[in-house]
Length: 454
Image (tube, rainbow, N blue to C red; front, side, top):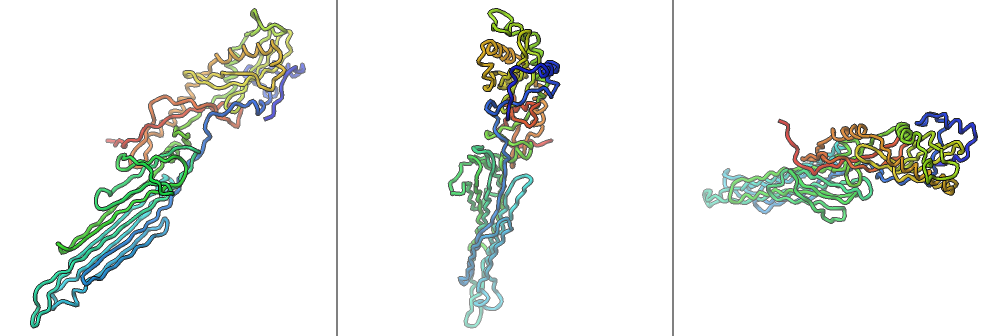
């Protein structure tokens, strides 16, 4: 931004300054924005929208053998985000070697299905696995010379494996940690396998939480969740046996769950930010009242020069990067009105906002080079730093709007809002320089099972 320093003002312009209200009501006389070089650094992390995209792919195999040695085996993969179905079956040769009609074929049947589930609104992805294996033992009577003789039996075995793979891509701020909640059901019986890793196959540590598990991920990137179940049935000691396994997996991102529920993008350390917007004319008026009749050089030893009876006649506060520009019209009986621009940082004490660490705009070298004006500026900055503007109402309003969105369902558990006061992050630049956006952040609590309403 380009900035013009007001030093020795023409009489007409000075009159315009002095005729303005304390809050800077005369916009035609308001000072120009500060130079970009004087802009305070923004400490508030930039808002980055988290994203969640996923593809779900199924695959598996079926295997079986029956009497006479006949066998089937098939293994194949499916198409991303499409249901996967694989089947196999076989009958034994008992009929061909039976005497009469007293026979039953051995049989093996295997079924595999993988059903993807993707919910872009809730930002979740998952699948349901089904693995069925059924085997029936065969029987027949042996052929004798004249009649059928003894009963013989033949074994059958079947197996099926269903596997699902969720390839998750997470977007968000650089270095912004995230957590994957992996809700699982059906992995307590039968053979099963589970893996959470990055795309390089490096496993991620998981911990059990509720009915699922949680994996901490270091930041945006691609990750994989793979699970499988295997059903087996061997008809040897029994005439018929079956095993039917059903399991499900659903994956959700904590960062995305918070964003979807609150409409706000979490900070890199997973806090939920909110703004308390303060009109700068109100802050200007508050500072003007604090400086009313204050003559920084009026008491000995004073500041010497022509500013012994000078005082602030008008105040303008503007948003400037991560802080504020404070323009003061300073004038006295022997001091032509001059604009002093201070650049201040924001600080929160209790329920009030203070503009502290104020210093001269670096471009005002003429003022900094004059001892009387430099001393006066330092004293004005000190009094401004001690002037608080109450923002408790705006902060409570923003905080309540965020807290009302909690608890947030995350898989099979819920995340609540911490009971601690929100943290002050800093000032956020706004397009309208006549307002200060004071940013706070509310921390979430550790996840826990959701409470059920009675």
